[in-house]
Length: 177
Image (tube, rainbow, N blue to C red; front, side):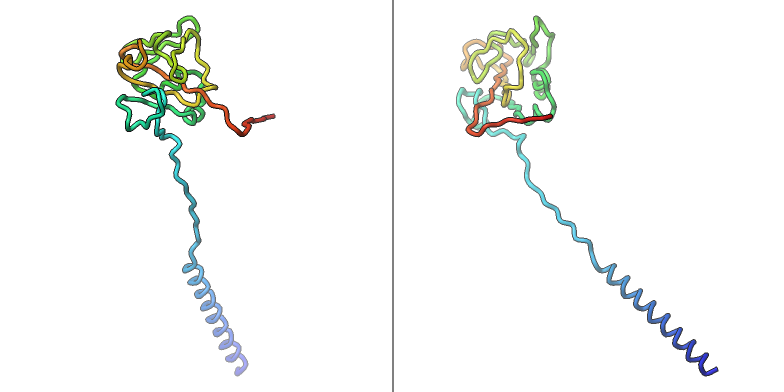
């Protein structure tokens, strides 16, 4: 009988000890927090600081006296744009017209852009009698309002300046297979 009491006492002691150990382990796990590391970087590739076609020189947009929308190459790439019309959908002042004789026709603020005076390439007059390829463009600038003072003749609604990509010092190429 004495042995039985000792056995029961030892058993109860072991049960109490194991439950206390489990409780302390649970408290340790509850107090331990998972560490989450967040790394971030700012992204301002959509914001363009200057427009070369607005004043025929590289002047910041804040110092430009005209309303200009600049659509950079990253927007064209992210939208997977394949035509100039898809690029110009980013500007509310332009509306697409018909496709006449294998070219896209646009209206700027209600005035149709003429194929001879409504388009510029790198700030120079560009005869747009064909559909414009956008693969060679680094950005598209939409100059709104009567800009005939700087460009000779143009529609009162504005014009579109297509800025082409410039060559780089380092070779750029991409292979896919």
